[in-house]
Length: 163
Image 1 (tube, rainbow, N blue to C red):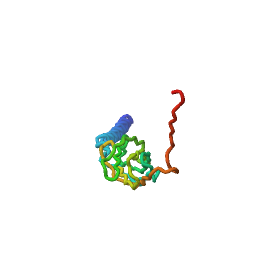
Image 2 (cartoon, helix red, strand yellow):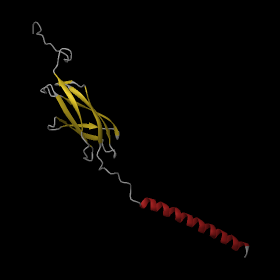
Image 3 (cartoon, rainbow, N blue to C red):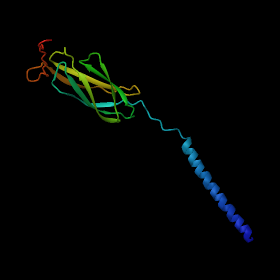
Image 4 (tube, rainbow, N blue to C red):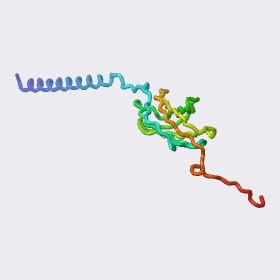
């Protein structure tokens, strides 16, 4: 074999090797891109735990803070809806925003000014953006009469002279 033939064979061998390598890379890439995209399952409901109310005991007509820990496995709890029920009654709705897939959620809740001094069972559930409802958590809040020591600020209106 002449030197020119040898060089030609070596050149063709290198080209063939590069072509095979290129085909393998393209096949691997196309296989990767042809696979089904990863889908997020928005069917998982958030989970609540450890509901607390402060202050407890509370006064009728006052506002308490309901505080619970939440975990949202599919991270679709951005603008949620809370359902708060007192002693098994019709739930009241409260919209909220959650920034993280898990954390502490604090919601204000007004105690009726007509509530009797007693123990109220407050139940909380939340709904994520996909419409999945969480488990229910509850806390008992003691409602007490306002006394001199725990009454809210007293406002006195006096008639101003000349008006």
